[in-house]
Amino acid sequence: MKKLRVGTRRSELALTQTAIVINEMKKYRPDMEFEVKKITTQGDKLLQEPLSQIGGKGLFVKELEEALLEGSIDMAVHSMKDMPYEIPEKLCVMPVLKREEARDVLISREGNKFMDLKAGAKIGTSSLRRISQLKALRPDIEIVQLRGNIQTRIRKISDENLDGIVLAAAGLKRLGLEEKITQYFPVDLIVPAACQGTLAVEIREGFEEEFMSMYPMLLDVKTLFETIAERKILKRLGGNCKIPIGIHAQYLKEDNIDKIKIKVAYQKNTELMKVEEKGIVDDIDKMADTIMEKLEEKDN
Image (cartoon, rainbow, N blue to C red; front, top):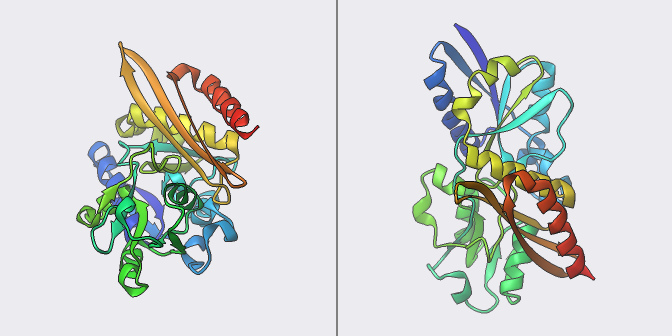
């Protein structure tokens, strides 16, 4: 029986997401044995500082990519939103399975929705993207820096006397914590991070044939189109954790034509700009050009 070594971060969410992918792969390769290898990343160690100050997205994937390149694992499972838009040569990253809920959510201490929170409410988050858009809605709120796994963040609501925290719905749902959610933010109000809710598999050269034999069964076309669109825009904007950027693409089928609607929230200096574009999926590059032009117009 062939063994496949799968690398993952050590958090409960990462292990849950890895199990989701492996269980799906087992349906198509019952002859294969899967060995999970837990790897600690820099992002897991450096929990005291905001990501924007310590290196951003790559902090959660670098050690996994090193393990791939040195051959100690065959495949890594990531949250696609953690993936920098540039990855090392000899590696390839692909979205897998259907995207989970992309929206951000509020968990509030007393069950109040965001706009009903008291003046000066203390909200926990370390994401510049979330801070930018939340402050645009409620300039009066106080932001409290918040890092750690999902359970740690929820615990800090009481430990640090917060009025609420904002985080991604996808992780809560995958961990069975959906009942904790007070409010979902519509993507028009809070544009999510690029690829939020999407799982990714990263492989190295030489393993493509083995993995690609399974990939058609793991592929969700809607998720693929949305991933391509969001990562293209992210690359054009130079997206990382140091720049407040939200990007959300929605695949649509209209009159039997594949279309995509893209929303972007981008803060430059102190101004938060939001733009939207819609077109056929074959025109994603052209749509990216139009989005950049719209942002430049708003900036002038």
